[in-house]
Length: 194
Image 1 (tube, one colour):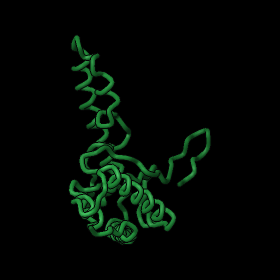
Image 2 (spheres, helix red, strand yellow; image 1 turned 90 degrees about the vertical axis):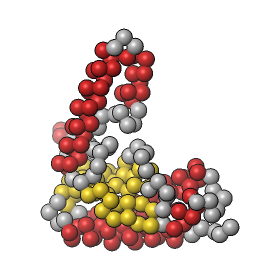
Image 3 (cartoon, helix red, strand yellow; image 1 turned 135 degrees about the horizontal axis):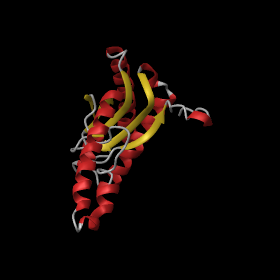
Image 4 (tube, helix red, strand yellow; image 1 turned 135 degrees about the vertical axis):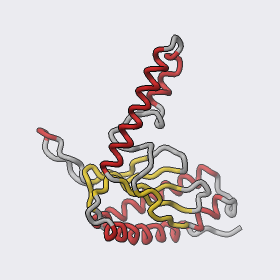
């Protein structure tokens, strides 16, 4: 049984993320970005780095809302529609948001970062439960995100407010880790970044 290099995988993800952010910023200097999104692939071989724009995000959110309203109106018009109402309103895949939580990013799979330690663990080369693997990955994504924010790695992007940093496991719900560039909150003043 080999001992996996979790710190090395985390460092690799941090370094590659910085480089990919710089590259995206250089290739799309005028493109406003509202979301930076890690997706862990189904084989846990690594993560895709994705970027979304405010226009694409709003379009996706509006389309999702239209589908949900149509479905809910049909469901709740039926005699027994109330029986699973909580699921069809509150489940993460059914919730309505003001950003694209459910659709494709404009720059889907901009680049993929392979992480052999994660893949080795997923394939059973170390005695790790599925929950432990998931928890280690979430911890690594949090730490990498925090380091990227502290290193000002997102400053190379033309960020739109609010700018979300998120992740999801393959076919799982999106989880927002951090929001930068909070928009003004009107009469109560401005929110702080970070």
